Image (cartoon, rainbow, N blue to C red; front, side, top):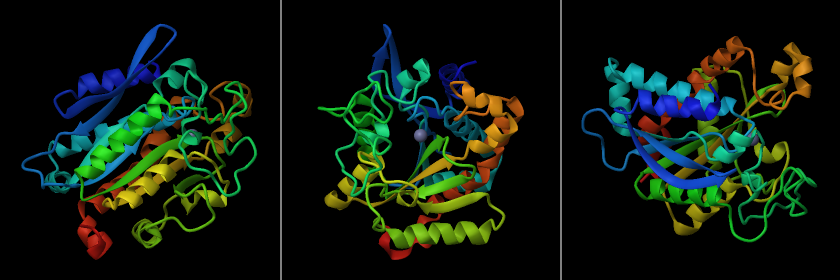
Length: 318
Ligand SMILES: [Zn+2]
């Protein structure tokens, strides 16, 4: 089953547990692909304006392990909530929303960018202080990787921007986790502001998340760091959304990225470096399962933070 079929199979299996909406339809090679927003149906009577956890995957079409981890986690929540009253109570306080594939044409074509050649994480109208040449985004040609695009924002970017604005309008706050793969040997949790070496807004809240993660799960596998410590990029959609939300005086919004380190998968099977997905996706089924299991702790932790947001973030959460 390919990644897009995995999503279809998931949504039909759990159709009674999900609310589905179509954010946009994109096309390539005479085919249409819906960008979907999934929301877990709450159990019982949910609180109004719940704190939201938004999971996003498939922004880069090659990084399909993120889609698999996301779907695996949603099914874990749905199945557990059938009998676990403590989890049901959590889901009455926290809203769980997911965009399993923001870039379905890239997934279909097996490429990082969209079918138009646009790298969505270089597409937003924000410029970095010191972008890394090429990797940091450029407007030379869609034939080269990390192309920012020229002119209007990509449909996929606009779909994400609309979805995030709608969710923030109806939430007391939101954590977003964008799942990627392919950078480094370690799994990293990145705070945003890839456009600047300055601290991102709400830095105290990011520190609180890091501290609680370290103290609750001292054996966790993540390196928690600022993205700009690795490299600066133009056009990061999360930087743009964070800035927009600040300008509009919106509720607390904390985007994070999970960057799954793929170099370990390559160490075990170095010949895979020469295959298309090699740098981004573990192929052996046991490695895919391991990636899914590995991140359940972090995702459970983020659900708990959202479900207990008032206590966790204190007075600043409205
Ligand atoms: Zn990526």
